[in-house]
Each structure stands twice: as C-alpha cells, then as structure tokens.
Image (cartoon, rainbow, N blue to C red; front, side, top):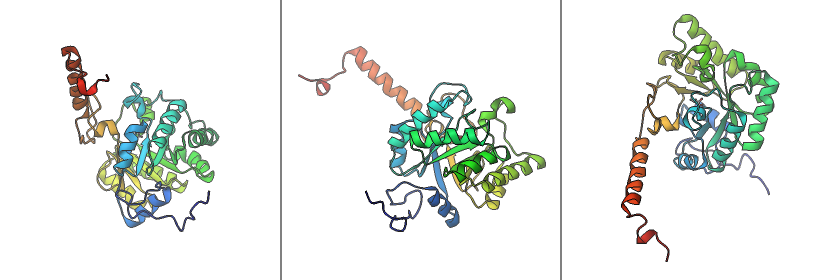
Length: 286
Ligand code: KIV
C-alpha cells in the first residue's frame, strides 16, 4: 500500500482539538513547543478507557507504571514487570487511533545499562506498538536515552520525583528544594535533553524551578505537581476521575467522582437483583 509522503500528511493545527485523524508524532510535539502551545497527557491502562481519551482528543497517553498502584493492586510501581507493561500498552494502542502512546519502562528494565534499555524498549515497540517509551532519571539515565534515540526510539524522560526510587527516597517527597537540589534538577533535565529525549516529565517540583527548567529547555516539560508554567500537564487518570481510593496527592484535581458513581451503579444493580426487578421485560428474550 502506498504511504502518503510526509509532505502530504496533514500537520495538526493543535495537539488538543486538532482535526487530523492520523496519529500524533514526536514531531508534532516539538512543533507545539515552538508554537508555545500547551497540551494535556493522561495515563491509560486498558483499551476502553484509552478509546474514551482518544475520542476526547487527548494527544498523548502514557501507559505508566502507575498501573502498579492504579490497576494491578501493588502498593508501588516497583513490582511492575515488562510483561505487564507490554500487555497493557498493546491494549491501549488497540483502543486508540490518534493519541501518541508512550509505554513506561518499569523498574529493573533499564537500570543495568543502555543495552538492557534498548532490548526492553525494542520489545515494547515491536510487541505493543507504542510510539515512544518513558524512563526515569536525569544524568543517571542519559546513556540509556542516547542509545535508544540513536536506535530510532523516541524517549520521554522523567526527573524530579521518580517513583521507582521510592525506597531510596523513603517516600514521595517534593524534589528540587534548596540551591543544590535545584541545580541538580536543572542538570538532570539538560542531560536528558542533550541525550535526545523529546520531552521530560517534571514530577513534584516547586513551580518556580519548573518554570526555570521549562524556559531553559527546547524540549517540552510535562508537569505533574510542577505548577502552571510547564509546557504540558499529566495526571494519572484514576486520580483525575476520582476513582482512586483514599489519599490523593495535593497536585491532583478530581474532575469527577467516578468511584462514587460506579459504587452507586453497582448498588442499584444489586438491589434490583435482590428485589427481583432485574431483568425486566426489556432485557429478556422469549
Ligand atoms: O507512571 C506514571 O503514571 C507516571 C506519570 C505520573 C508521569 O510516570
């Protein structure tokens, strides 16, 4: 089949709300930074939810290792495996037409070095069909980013609070506070940019520092708990939709109370079953 040449492909006017139905690429992301356009990113872990976000026009979906907490019932992202990320990334790719799908490299899948990172990122692209991968770390992961990018794999980096290091951090503290920590965060962000990352997540970073990083980079910053000045914003979808049980971080805004709604629907169903009113005639074959 003849592929349209890049010149024939319509360039989306904007990432969110654009009219093009082809998949968003990392070139579109770079163009948005040049235009000064902000964009949203959400996590997704299954085909059906991903299709809702795709139809809503969310340009980038992250199959985050937050699936450990939000989807798989672990108490952190640490236990998540390549098999789990690959399976759920493939589902998200199948559920979407337009969103750029970014697959997260889980803990232990790239820390050994660039060759291990390349092997696992290649698997994620070939088996799941993601358009890019994400990994955590700044200077410490720059060699991995460089080899992936030079092998044709777009990389989103992730600095600041990197949840895979929860055991080293002793929790999930805000990062980059104090002059030394702020300078390290700037060095980390520059290191992944110089290594070829197409974007960098800044997690749990003071807004003023995130603004400085955003001004000093030519790749977009994707903030989560990093203030308004980032080029893009990401939220974990179960947090954003009010599905997460218990405590949610200060930086989360809940746009819906899905947990309550779903619970009410389950109770209504249960009461009709117990009361003998479901199924009604309309739901019955004769
Ligand atoms: O795994 C994830 O969902 C993430 C986002 C919070 C950026 O890394």
